[in-house]
Image (cartoon, rainbow over all chains, first blue to last red; front, side, top):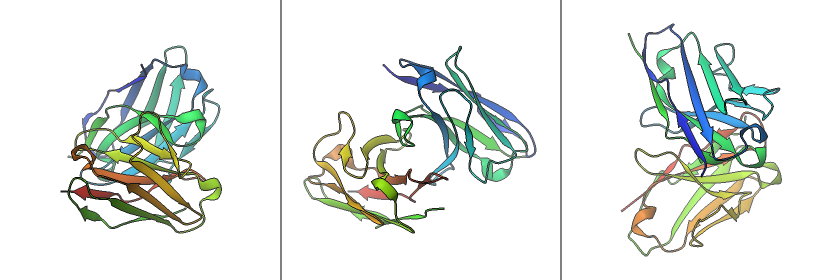
Length: 119
Length: 107
């Protein structure tokens, strides 16, 4: 059974940093591209970042460029999102998601972890 | 960036009725790289349709997708109580990946 479990969310002040891990199990982790997608309270879904199976290629939304870094440790079956210079509008539930056949759509999602940026 | 506009924003229907949701793209979605997801309150999204018309694993056949180019449709042929939720379309033909704003199907 495929499982994705995010953690690391919480309350952080504007300008602060947070690292979100996503532990994956039940599939060959290194074979698949992975993404982070976020959802602000009461709002829609927003793609944040993606990484290839090997970790050699990374992609970012404009809102994340220069502030967020996606990475993965295939030996630990874990995806990460390092978030720096956090802003109020980064407040959201952050989901990690597995790409089906690395095509850019998602067949499995984690339960999400809530990040609140507030002073 | 491809902007996806979903309509209507809210659809008020009864169990057993047919739901038709629209997703219009600001430019052509190549290779019909369009997916649909269902999201219930407090839950993660669930993949329903990919490639505009292919049902994902274990998705009932009352869900169907159609369309090409810039106009896509998700149809739920006969609403079951568990289908009342928010539905999102997503294009994966070009970066950045983008989602529509969502459409709520309510009783």
